[in-house]
Length: 379
Length: 135
Image (cartoon, rainbow over the protein chains, first blue to last red):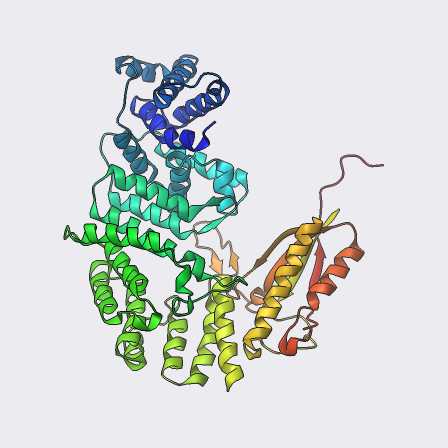
C-alpha cells in the first residue's frame, strides 16, 4: 500500500467533495472512510485511476451519511444537481484547499493545524507530536477550525499572502517527532508553486530551500547552535541551494518584488559566499533596504544593523542600532556582537549575559551564555 | 510508580556549594554541564523513568481576576517569586528513595572548574487520584 500516494491524493479528493457541497467535517469523515476502504481493497484489486476511485467511494460514503440525516436534505439537493464524478484537474482543487485552510477567520495556529491536516494529509497524532501538545488538544484545535470554516464556500479565492504566511509558520516550526515540518512546508509550498503562478510563492519556496540547505550545519555535534560565520559550509546542501537560486532568479526576473523574494535574495547571497569573510555584505544591506521599504518591520531594521556592521564596520552598525527600540527581540544580542567586534569586550560580555536572560529558546540561551563565558574567561 | 517533580531554581534556594554564575564559566565547562544534563535525561528515558523536562524563561507575570468587566490584574506583591523556577523535570519512579537518589545525581552536574555545583533541587511528589480499588 502506497501511503505517500494516498496522502498526496487526500487533499484533492477532499476538495472535490467540499466543492460539491459537502461540509468540511462530513467530507473529511467520508474521505477517511474511503481511505480505510482503499487500504482494505487495493492490495487485492488495485484501481486503474486511484484518485477517481477515492472520489467515487468518498462521495458515496458522504451521500450515505447525508441521507441518514434529514437535516442534511438541502445538501443532497445540491449534490443531485452536480455532474457525476469524473476526471478533475488536481491543480485547481488543491489550491482552493490552501485558501480555505488559511481563511482569515482562523487563528494562525488553527490555520497551520488545518493546513497540515487537510492539505498535508498528516494525522492528528503526527501534528500533535510535531507541536509537542497532547493529541486531544490538537484534535480539539482542528475540529474547532473545521467548524469555523464549515460554512465557507469556494466561490472566490482568498489572499495568497495569507496562505504564504501559514506555510512560513509551518516551516519555521522546525521539527520533532516523526514529522519534519520544514520538509513538509517545502513539500506543500512546492505543490502550491505548481498550482499557482505567483512570484512570491516562488520567493517563499526559494527562501525555504536556501534556509533548509544550511540546516545540517546549524547545530554542532553536541547540539549547540553554530552561527552562520562558524558553520562548516561543506555540510550545506548544494543541490537545494542551486534549486533555490534558480527559482529565485526566475521570480526576480518578473520584476514583481515582494518580501519573500527579498529575504530569499539575502539567503542566496549568504549561500553564495565560499567563506563567511567573502560574503557580499554591501549587497545584503541593499536588500535589507528593499525589505524595510516593503515591510517597514523593526526586525528587518535590526537585521540591517547587523549587515551594516559587517559592510561599514561595527560603529556604523551600533549607530543604526541606537535608532531602534531596545526591547526588540535580539536587540541586546546584536549590541553585544557589535561591541565585541568593536573591541569593547567588557560591555560585550555584560550584554551577552543580559541577552541570554531574554532568549526565547534554549539553544539560543546556551549559545549566548557561552559567548559571555568565552569573553569573561579571556579577560 | 509515582511521579515526582524536580525543580531547579534561579533564586530562592540555599546557595549551591560551587556557586559561580554560568557566564563566569569557560565555554567548555558550559558544554560539559549541558552534556551531563542531556545524558542524565537520556539515561532516564532508557530506564523508563523520564516523563518530561523543560526550561522556563526568567520573566513571568502574575495574573489575577479583578472582577466583572475589569481587565485581569497583572503582577502583585510577589514580584520575586515568579522568577524562582528555572526549569523542571518530571520523573516516574518506584520509590521516594529512587527520586531522592536521582535528584542527588542531578545536583552533581558539573559547573565552574568542572566540579559539581551541589545546587539545591526541590523534589515534590505529584498528587494522584484516589485508587479505584482499596485493599
